[in-house]
Image (cartoon, rainbow, N blue to C red; front, side, top):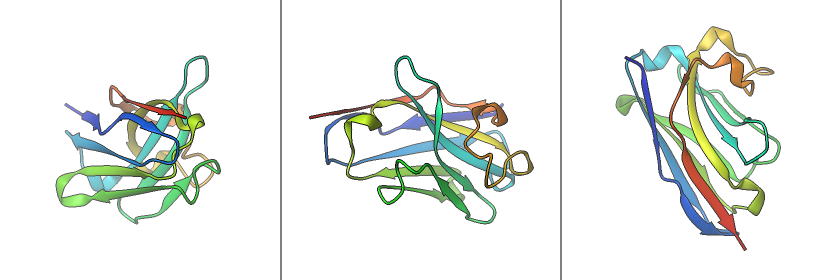
Length: 128
């Protein structure tokens, strides 16, 4: 059974930092592309960052470039999202997702429909 479990969310002030983690099980970690998505109330789910586990290639939404870093601890089947200099607009439910690597590419990694496995989410709230 494929399972993704997020952790690390919380409430922080603008300018603060958080590190999210996604623990994966039930599939071959190295064959997948992993993604972090977020969804704010009343808005569509959007891609934040993506990572090809096998190659280490990373992708970021323009809104988080230079502030967020996606990485993985392969031996632990764990993916992280280090979030720095948080802004109010970063507030939302953050989801970990996984898909087979060939189903996404440099221009499609951010599309939620391409990911078949999702965690339950962890809330991030950034306030002034």
